[in-house]
Length: 412
Image (cartoon, rainbow, N blue to C red; front, side, top):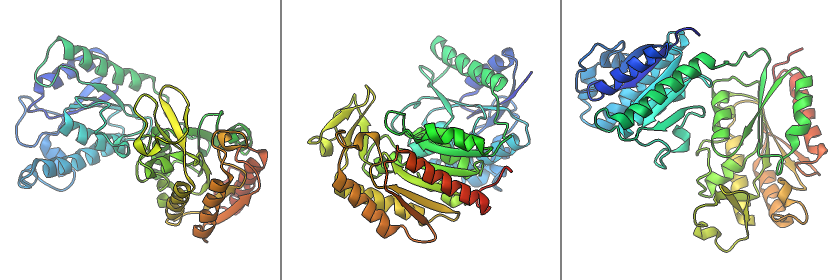
């Protein structure tokens, strides 16, 4: 891409110096800046390509309508809706090729909404005073958004913030010029998993799925991985979902910060995307190794996976609660849905002799699934471990049947 157009988002009345500086860096890097003013009250000292009036008009309001809301939060929520709709239209019309937003907590809140509507793979960068902050909930973070802390730049330009801003501008231009957007030459199947030390089924399934003419993308369920797959499912970019690692669901249910949000395991069902589901990883709960062990898990054996993630074994009661949560989500699905229950284990660490071996807990989980998962959701029980060939074979047999029945798009 010779000269990508970058949508530059910010409150142009209060951040005019910073936005004009960013525009100059974008131009020097070979891009075309297109400024979107998302301010509400003031007027910028320059003419943006997309004014605050254009932003309000995108949702059928006037700038005065937004002002008349009389509350800055309500006003910015509506402004965010307008910015997101306008940005989505511009991206859909191929009039912009990347997004760069700048701001404090208010503009970051808005920028997250804009990033969410842009396609996976569309370069999106946020310069924020709250980048990487714990106040950002996982369900608000677009899975491929890039962020950098706006250090030293809350009020006015200086040498510190110029360094940050120039990096951000160069990063988004470089991304636009280098990105290889999904070609979608083959139907794409999304699969979730953890690393091969705990869940191994993708090793057997990947070549088999590719033999059938599909492309397989495996998403790492450590928070944002599940979000990425669900973003694709929401936009119906997936021919099917093989959601075999549900630890993000149980993590969220039991208060872990290693979460993909409250709506994990709901996107495919809401979009009608065919989904085959299994409970990989729902033997444990994750937490941060470098922080104190949460009090409720203090008396349990802790397995330290690495310096970032540690985990503790779920009790039978917590597994039943997880099963109930999973079943409730599946029963809301609008498309073909099935659940495969491996009766001999759902994580490499829960095999006999492993740190999470718990036959009673596994049986309690399976019983709750059996009681809660009802037609039209299909339930299949496999007398094998999730990492055994028999589990992968069951999944393939089900997938083949759904392809033959027309539930999953055929490539033949």
